[in-house]
Image (cartoon, rainbow, N blue to C red):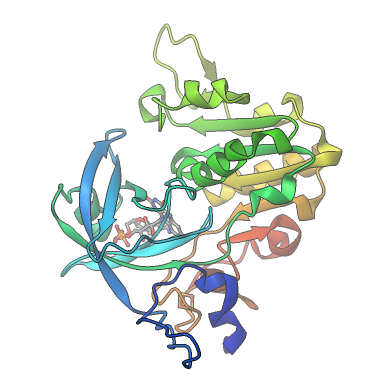
Length: 303
Ligand SMILES: Cc1cc2nc3c(=O)[nH]c(=O)nc-3n(C[C@H](O)[C@H](O)[C@H](O)COP(=O)(O)OP(=O)(O)OC[C@H]3O[C@@H](n4cnc5c(N)ncnc54)[C@H](O)[C@@H]3O)c2cc1C
Ligand code: FES
C-alpha cells in the first residue's frame, strides 16, 4: 500500500479545516488536527423524497465551515458512526452547512432521522472539489444521476454566482421517477439564472408528460460546444462511466471531464487506506478526479 505523503494532508485538501486555536501575529502557527470533529446543531430537516433528506446545520461554536464545491465531510451520528457525505450547500453562504442524505444503511438512517436541535459530529471539509470556475470562458455541463445532483449543487451555485463568465450552462439530470427529483423548488430559479435544465426519469407513471430515459441519452444533443466545455459528472459509477464516454464521444477532452468518485472511507485524510484505488487515495486525491486520470481505474473493485 502506498503511504500518503505529508503533502496530501496540507493545502487545498484542508482548506477551511477548523483551526485549533487563536493564531497570534508572529507566533508559530497552531497545527491543524485534520481528524478533529466539531458538533453541529440541526436547524432544519427537509424531506426531499421518500428516502432522501436535506439537513441544514449550524456550528455549535459559531465558526462557519468554509468549503469548496465538491468537498465532503465525515458526518457522524453520535454513538452510531460517521460516513462521508458531500456538502450540498452554497459555498458563498457557509454560515449554514447543508447535506443531502439518502437513507441506505445504519448511519445514513440515523442521519436522516436527526431532528432540529439534535447534535451531529462534523469532520472536514475534505477532498478536492469541482473547481468549476476552470470552465470560465466556455460552456459548462453538469450531468447528475440520482443523489449525484447534491454534490453538484454547490458547483452550479458557484457558476451561477459568476454567470457572466460562462457561455451556456446546462444541467442534465436523470433520476428513478418523478417522485425522486431533488431540489424541485429550485429548478425554476436555476432556469431563471439562464441555466438549461433537462430532467429525465427511468420510469414515468401513466400520463407523465416529461422525458423518460437514461440521462446519458441527453448528451449527444445537449446545447454545449464540446471544444470549449468543462463537464462535471456525479452519480452511480456505472452512470458516470457511460456519461463520461458519451461526453468524450461528443468531443469533450477527457481531462475536461470531472467525476466525483465514491469509495468506502474511514479516516478521510489519507491514513487508513480504505479508499485506495491503485495509486490514488480517493479521500484526498479526489473525490473529484478527471476522467483522463480515472478511466482505467474505474473497473477496480473497492476493498
Ligand atoms: C465522497 C463521498 C461523498 C458522498 N456523498 C453522499 C451524499 O452527498 N449523500 C448521500 O446520501 N451519500 C453520499 N455518499 C455515500 C454515503 O457515504 C454512503 O451511503 C454511506 O457511507 C452508507 O453508510 P450506512 O452506514 O448508512 O450504510 P451501510 O450499512 O454502510 O451500507 C448500506 C448499503 O449502502 C451501500 N453503500 C455503502 N456505501 C456506499 C457508497 N459510498 N455508495 C453507494 N452505496 C454504498 C452498501 O453497499 C450497502 O448495500 C458519499 C460517499 C462518498 C465516498
Ligand atoms: S485513506 Fe482513509 S479514507 Fe482514504
